[in-house]
Image 1: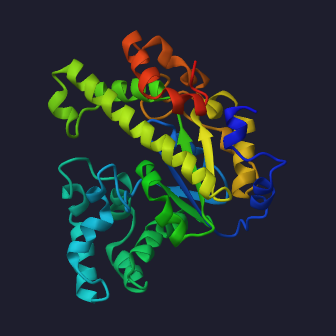
Image 2: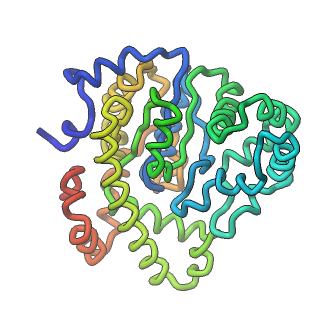
Length: 327
C-alpha cells in the first residue's frame, strides 16, 4: 500500500461512500496547510465549481503566532452584545484597522475585500443581526463572499488554520477540511524565491540585504512548521476521517483530473471540467501560464543546494517518508 493510499479515502472505503451523500445545497469547506503548499491553487480549483465559494484568508482563528488571529484583536472591543461595541469594531475595520493591526504581517486579503466590496452599513446590520459570537462573526465573513458569488457551499482558506481544526469542527461538525501537503524542499525553494521578489513584512524586509541570513531564517521556519504541519495532518486524518482530506500538491499538479475527481467525491459535489481551467499563480516559475504547472512537483531539485537537501533529509526524514517524500 502506498503512502497516498494510506492517507486519502478511496472508492472502496466507507468514508469515501459516506461523503458522496453530502447535500450540495449547503456546507462548509476549509483549506489549510503551510504557505507555498498549494492552498491558493486549491482555492482556485474549488471556486470553479458552480456550488463552492471559498473566500481568501481571514486569519480569524489565528496565525503562526496565535495573537495574530483577528478574533484575538477584536476582543479588545469588549462584549459585542453591546451595540456600541459592534459599531466601534466596524468603524475600526472600515477605517483601515486591519491594515494597522499588525507590525508582523500585511493585512490578510479578505478584510480588504470586505471593506472594498461590502457596504459598511450592510456589514454592520448583518453583524448586529447575528448572536454576536465569534462563530457567527466567522460565518458572516464567509457568507458575504458566498452571497456575492451566488453559491451555496461556503468556506475559506487560511493556511495556518491547520492549528485550529478542533475549533473548526466544533463550530462546523459536518465541514470538510482539505490539508495541502508539499515536499518541504519544494516549499523552501518557493518561499525563498518569493521573498527575493517580495520582502515587505518582518523579518524579510530587514534581511533583504543579507541573503544568506534570510535563507537560513526561511530554512529554519520551513523545517519547524513543516514538521508541525505533518504531525497535525496525520493526527487530524486519523481523528476526523470523514471530515479531513490530505491532498498532496505534487499529485494535484501532475494528475489534476484524477485528483480533483477524487476530491469532489469526498466533498460531495459533482466534478466539473471547468475546475481544471487554471492559471498558474503565487509567483511560481510559470506564473500566469494557463493550466496546471506539472513541473512544479519536482522543479525544486534544480534550485536546491546539496546541503539544504541533506538538512531536510536529516531533520524531517521520518515524516518525509510517511508522506512519500523520501526521494
